Length: 414
Image 1 (cartoon, helix red, strand yellow):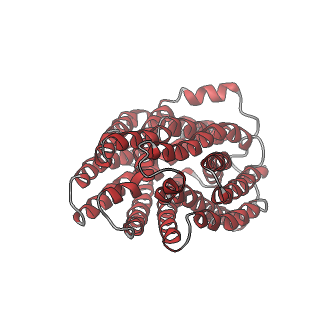
Image 2: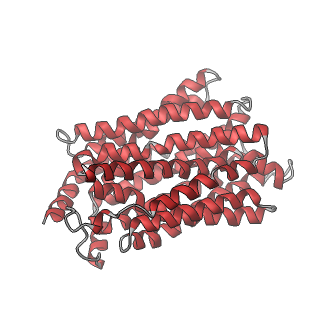
Image 3: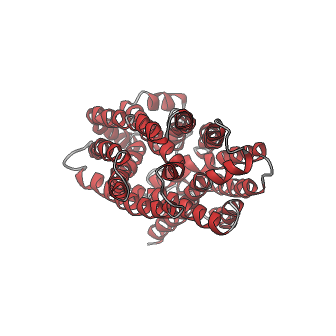
């Protein structure tokens, strides 16, 4: 009972931290128009591309820091790494609100990314260590529920703060809770510390372990598919507020979008994790099957939304978001299941590096550039086709996932 309580305590704490992780990320997107107005002239054609670099700077620092900090998380207490990372990014987020120049704001977002780079690989690894493979999909889906909720709250928080105060207060607001949650991590126990734990790490990871990871087909294919989804979702997520303004929607549309995001995203994330676990006995590669179906169905609904007048477009956007998030739990679970416990944090870290380097880090300025020289509809249409690459990759990877999962399960029990 004590171990069970510890599991759920860890899940609750990591879920709250992840919530602020995504709130902080989308607050920037929500207040991007106000930041642009603060630091650039209204007639500057490169202003959107410049503010898009804020998103890229965060993502680049995040993905570069993740492998190094993931390596540390495989060798030292993952909770200490998480706690230090959360406190660091929370303080850097507060510094974003204090920025007097665009350069200072850019530097602050870089440090936010470094801090979040320590959390990203370690958090899902702790949960994968604590929960067995039979329930791991649902647990990681519950953890990933913070993605739509945090993103939605980021938009809502940014919208409310800029409506009544300055955009700077949106960054101040997330600092104190983040610091407190970071401190709580220091009181948690790493599951590997108990010699009775079934997945205790008995030796350091070797070069052969890392080589095996990158030679695992389902791991590589999953990274490719997640990169494509991240390119679409990350890029569109950053520019959605500007897009709604382009479509003539009022300021309140940002908050309404937040409601749609949390409703559709949360429901889809939980359903995706549940479906992956339930179908696993009948279809051993169910996590890729569910992910591929979601990506396939998201594409036509999103494209239809671009050419449908509001308010009908809201319904299509809701459905598109639902299918986009269907892969969140299953794809994360697949990553955990095909990586050995002793290299699992590094596996998540490498995944973060790849999906962000070729995903939203590239998409954010790309959309800003296309929109600045054409319009937002054209920019969103261009990137939406990348979703089909994700679907094709997951469907192709179905033939490898069961075999790779079984190999890791056998090695773990040995």
